[in-house]
Image (tube, rainbow, N blue to C red; front, side, top):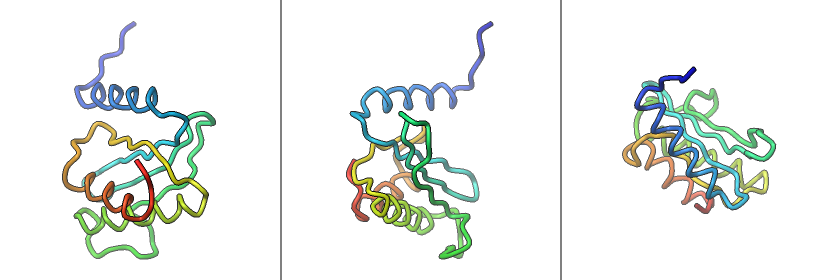
Amino acid sequence: MATHLTPFAKRRSRTRHRVKSNAYGRPRLSVFRSGKHIYAQVIDDKTAATLVAASSNEKEGKPAKTYNLDAATAVGKKIAERALAKGVKQVVFDRGGYIYHGRVKALADAAREGGLEF
C-alpha cells in the first residue's frame, strides 16, 4: 500500500535523504520551524540520538518574541555553544524542507558565527 505524502513531506524527505547520504560521518543540524517557535537539534544518525537541542521555547534567555529573526539568531547561538561544549564542531545542515531564507538562514548564520562548521 503506497502512502501519499503532502508536497511538503516529499520535499522534507528528499532533502533529508540528500543530507544523510552526503553526511561524511558528521552529525546533522536539523531545523524545525512552527508559527510561534523555532527548534534546532544536532542528531547523530548512526546511533539515532539527539546530541544537543535548543529552541525559542526554553525558559532561560527567552526573547520577547519567539517567532522573529532575533529569536532564530538566539537559537543558532545556543545550539552552537552547546554543540561545541559536547565536542561537536562540524555538522551537516538539514533545513528540513524549508527555504533557506528568513528565520532558517538567520539560525544557520548564527550557528556559523558561534563556531559550527557546515
